[in-house]
Amino acid sequence: MRDHVLGGRYRLVRRLGEGGMGEVWEAQDETLDRRVAVKVISMLGGGGSRGSEARARFLREARITARLQHPHIVTVHDLGESGPENGDAPFLVMELVRGEGLDAKLARGDVSLPEAARWGAQICEALAEAHAAGVMHRDVKPSNVFITHTGAVKVLDFGVARAADPYATADRLTRTGFIVGTPPYMAPEQARGHPEPGSDLYALGCLLFELITGRLPFQAPDGVGYLTAHLSEEPPVPSAVRPGIPAAWDALLGRLLKKDPAGRYRTAADVAHALRRLDRPAPTEVLTRHASPPSAARSTSVGGPWLPVAVWLLTVVATAILVSINLNGRFDASDAATGALVVTLSTAWLIGYFVVMSRPAWRASVMKTTRFVLPLLVFAIYAIVIARTARDYGNYGLYWWKLGISTVALASLLVMVAVLAPRTGLWTRRAGYALVAFNAIALFDTGAAQLDVAVSVTPYIAFVNPQAGTAPAGALAIAMYCVREIATRRAAEGRPLPRTEASPRSRGV
Image (tube, rainbow, N blue to C red; front, side, top):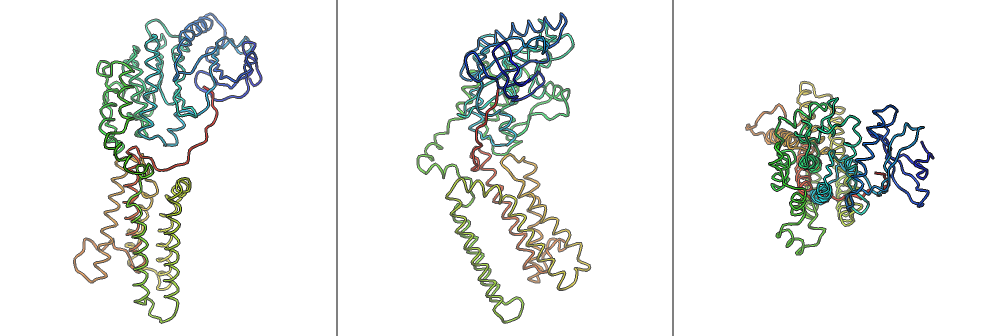
């Protein structure tokens, strides 16, 4: 359809998206010489009396929704039919918005609690305007919410799902049993075929739940499973899905996701007011922000600048001790040279750390890399140590199983360090702490064996020879997990880790 002209004035330039109802195109309005977005409802194309009736009803209902004028609702400029060559499929002409869909932001997992509150309040303002005009959305979901390049919300497709249903009847439930809406976000009464303005608030609750936890309130393999869950299951508490979510969010979403519409907020304006309160900092937080630099208020680092200094100091002290006791028993310059190299590298690392932390853009890039590189580096050092031991002294003989247990435990913990993120769930974090405990027991038993102490938990999981090379890897893995776990929890509380902003891109609505 590229270069095809609709309605004698809208030349299709570039397809922007495709969905169940049809396609969205960027088009040139040749009458007013401007770019617009054109949504072609191809599902209503075709001949026959039923098709003609459906198109007429779509255009009639689309005119009602086109009357909505609000800063957070996409403006409809025009509507018409595409012509016999396209089955007379109806089309909507809307403003072309620059930015990206909320579904794209969700896929990247970069939505903070303040952003969720602010965008949710703007969606509510759009819903309040529509409800006051007697229009329900019926399909509130991330792909129908657009975030402009200025950070403002634009809600798409008001009433389009209802208008595009070719079998809709006055009683709202179609003769074929098809229900208008998207099952993962559908209110119980809407699933029964009787939507009301409160149904849009329930769908908003599902959307907000997904924004702040990274998953929907219900999990199901198909649409029928989602509808069954909405009708019969109670949603989980958000803070149980994602630790660190404030109780105020639990209360708000618990009310939005009530099965009975009477238990929800009375109007969308009430929800907007509640969300704006969540977006405002508490008085103590305001005092903190005024008392300290903004960058410090947003920091999620653990231990501040003292932690890397302490690590550097411990490295220098440990290196000096190892050089002084002369592990290989040979009196030559190799031990001193190795110690000097370790101290030089650790000092360079410390300097680099403070340089990178002083530049937010560099810090964001480095954090994306070190999240995976550091665990891999620790395990590589561990593997090199045990490989050299096997080469120099033969394999581990009867102790191969002990090597396997401690190695698997260490590798599993390092994997957990790499996968931790602000949206990581509670059970994953608990599994990580279970691995921390396992490696701590291995360290304890290793130390007991080295000191020739009879007290131990179970010596069968201790780190194998050379313990001076294998046990520190386990200790470092435990420290890395604890530091990252605390940092990701802080980020989950609405203080996101620094990240580079994605450049705005054009998208039609």
